[in-house]
Amino acid sequence: MKYKTIDPADNHWRQNYRLLVGSVVPRPIAWVSSISADGYANLAPFSFFTCVGHDPPLLSISVGVRESSYKDTARNIMETQGYVIHTVVDGLEEQMNICADDFPFEVSEFEEAGLTPIDSDLVKAPRIAEAPVAMECRFRHLITNGREHLTNVIIGEVVRWHVREDVMIEEGKYIDPVLLRPVGRLAGNGYCRSHDVFDMQRPDRKATQFSPKG
View 1 (cartoon, rainbow, N blue to C red):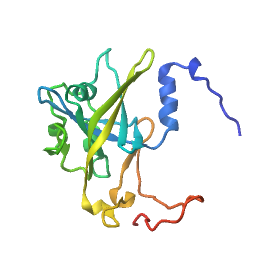
View 2: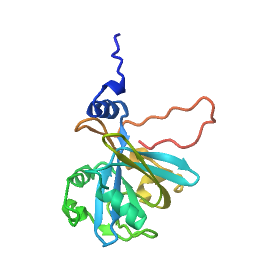
View 3: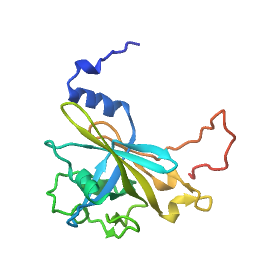
View 4: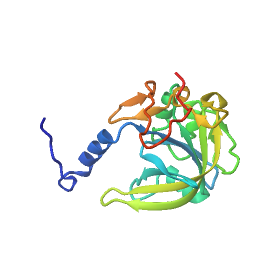
């Protein structure tokens, strides 16, 4: 079996991007609602998204820089310090994709995608009523990386969860991935649905009672 060895320093940034999104798969999608100081709500998806820590619970999203300025999501977070990350699930993928369009700042993605904004508990940004999981976040850190093309890595602390009860089991201890049916991001125009879920017990840990429902 032959392998191609690639030095990213020899590549154009776009080719490195292609290799990155083809290697790190599937990626969870952070569907982020934010609001400006003037009260304009924004809704946008980001697949450069992951957990950072659990005590306290921290999440990161990476938001590209457009023409040397913040994108709407990053600017809103800097202005109002709060935002909401939603889990994208089967049945909401089309609405999520609509929110990826480049709408003018004053246009509401909630309206364009036919989604219902409802008040959050602790942050100013509204959350999506139709989403089964919403995490209210408070801004904690901004790290800007890059050379020719900059990226703002935004780290926030989860200060409130809203989880629909029908995707939880074990008296609300667990979110069941089979019941949740999350959608993941692949390369290009590719997405995937998490319908084939299986258990595998780590050898250094005791067996747990939790098992995804199927």
